[in-house]
Length: 208
Image (cartoon, rainbow, N blue to C red):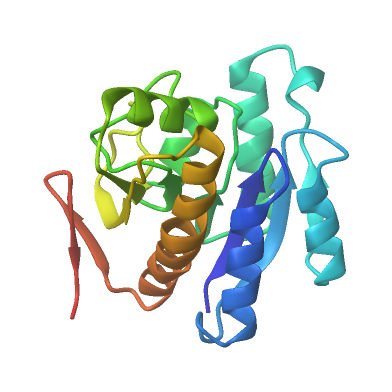
């Protein structure tokens, strides 16, 4: 059994996709045991409560540095015996303390096909605005292992989504969520829970 923590900063739509997948038995005997939010009052915390999942708020503004916040994060995750950390719209920066405590055990979903439209400043609608400005015909989502370099970790899964001529950043964001993010994030968690992910030379190999 793997114990999963989902880190959130907002509404928690990807958290809900994970909860729904868990309810189908997709993760076997592994389960989401903690939802951790970077600020109070976000709807993701209600999603956790509605589904009987323990939650905690670690508000960044209550810590005087990234280092002190990162230590609190590591302590909380360790105290809860977490095996896998899932960043699901977690917009707070942490440092190497977290990476060192959970090597190859932190994953993130990014709303584009990395290495396109990723890195510093590319989050939320900014990603889709950039994609539309470039005129790409295909975008999508990527689930990757988190490393100190933003959006540069080994790629686990990707899924492409068509871009329509009349798309706005909002319509493209929604389509990528529904057709890609909400599908490949639970699938990546499933692969981790089944011990089917191996990382070698910054590449992910998936056991068939």
